Amino acid sequence: MGALKLEDIHYTYDDYKTWEGDWELYDGIAVAMAPAPARKHQSLETAIITELNNQLDDCPQCEVLGEIDYKVSNDTVLRPDVAVTCGETNEYYLTKAPEIIVEIVSPSSAKKDEVYKFDIYEAEKVKYYIIVYPDDLIAKLYKLDGKKYDKQGDFSHERYRFEETTCPISIDFERVFRRFRK
Image 1 (cartoon, helix red, strand yellow):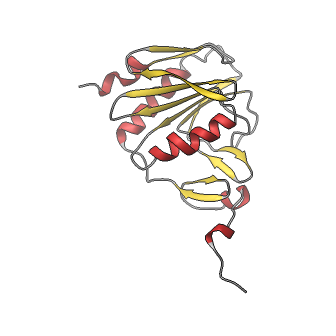
Image 2: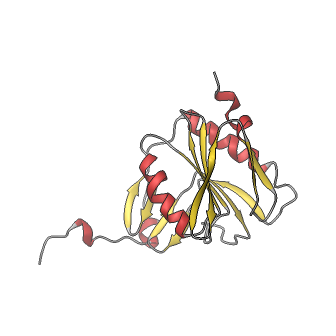
Image 3: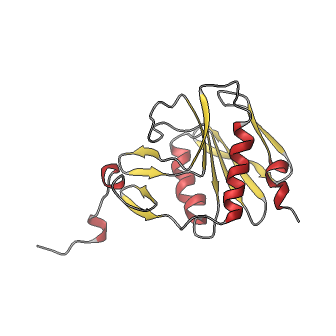
């Protein structure tokens, strides 16, 4: 009997849900999440959730969620910082692509957010993907154009209105970043 190799290990959601600590699962590979994010990261997450949530009072089919599992497949589970989902019925994790996902970059998550998650969210047809850079107070916003993301711009002081969402919604980046400006 040969030695077990790393490439022979392939985890599933059933394994994932029994683990202690914070993890994500990429094509069967367990990826440990960093310790709790810095205060600035958490404050930005709260500001974005508040900004979006305040607009959904008249939209009962949509909700804004922070740090919920998105079960892409049986061997891929991600935990976006912020997700806007509409018509989701599962109580424990997301089962279909959210309309908007926001990831707030930290030094340990940059490659995951910019490459791995970007590719997965694009393939899963998440309509809008926003990558927030706390140190620069910039949000890179991508809109799904057919099968590929099209960069809408780098936002710092502008408002962006999402055109292809179930309910009318926008983000005022000036307001989101205001308290962090010097």
